[in-house]
Length: 358
Image (cartoon, rainbow, N blue to C red; front, side, top):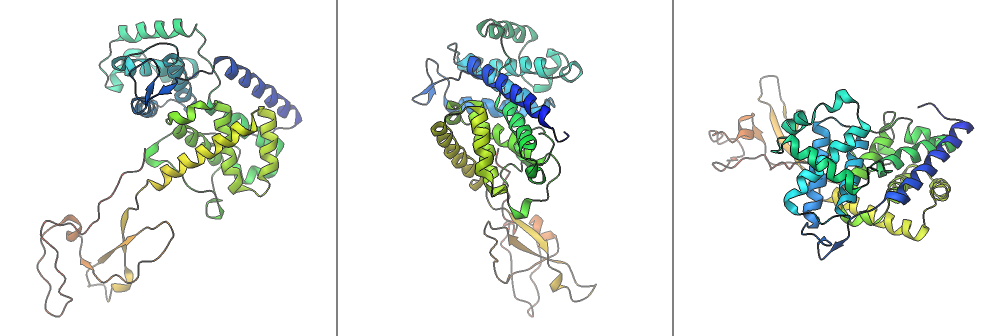
């Protein structure tokens, strides 16, 4: 995206106003009471797991982030309008994503409903999906296209580029990519160590963060515009010293209540930090060249733990000869002149590795 001028700035203001009007008219989310959606037997954990599953399906089908966000909005609007049973929840969620794809995606990307069902591994029939489509369209009066949190991320990002061009080196000019929790950099802190980012990285970062937050039912009490601005403000605080004037400009244009925004910002900060700190510190093995005496000596490995604070462990007093120890293969005890280190049978020296947080 090129740096827009005054005309582009006015166009973005009109775009933001139209998105806010759509949000005010169509925004509706289910109310949770005693851990379940009010009037239904769907728990908050089932609701969260279904949104995470929609994210997996969105990546599987190679849909854009806007499709995922619209699918979640359609799902929430329906769950707030009808008393759905848990056994129909996956069918409702899948159909919501299909309807969102029909709005946002090209025909060659979507394919047929039958192909999508087969690709997903679900046991729905095409007739069931089509029947659920008619139910959703009828309950939502054929008015599906609402402004989503991802839409507001893109609009706010464009407004920042338009009104505050000095931020371009920090926030870039591009826009987001699809969300993959397994390789997600959304929880990386913004700071001096993360300034060298490719164009569009920051918008992609905000997009992924808002997708994380869309799986948290506590944050659904806030509109998408408020949620998007809270995420952007948290990043701006770390990216620029002039963040407050930039934030107030966006807050005024978005017509968001300041007290509601502060509450949302605090909850988003707490939620994203809970995801960040729940990521376990994995042990990795690095090559220790200091232990090599000559080319004939065996390669030695030593474990080094990656700590958040960057503290060092001190000298490692145990070394494992060759790669066999990493796979828990039997080794013969060393000669008397060595340290006499022995490994217990059937115990791997490699610490357990943990998958990334979804």
